[in-house]
Amino acid sequence: MSNLKFDNEPIIHSTGAFLKPMKVVDSEGREQWLWYVSEFTDDSFFEGEIYNPNEFANSKEELISLSEEV
Image (cartoon, rainbow, N blue to C red; front, side, top):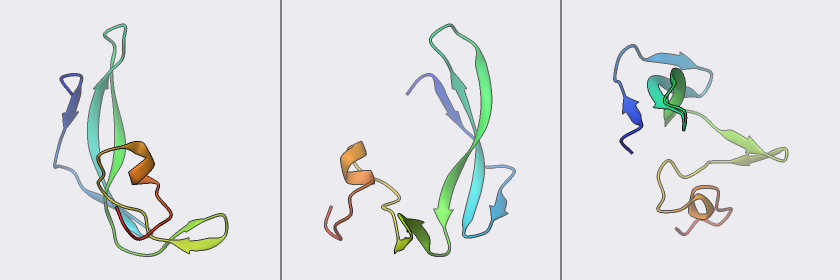
């Protein structure tokens, strides 16, 4: 995680989500800033159905799990 820098400001709101800035450093040492979703505030959709994703998980599989249990 040393190649990531999370920041709390500014926070912007998109329909259904709050976004925050994050700096990433790629394998060649280049820095870039991007927006990441920090909080969901409305329904999300997956394959046309309402889907409320896990906000945190110990693995990518758990993060996108379709079951209610993590």
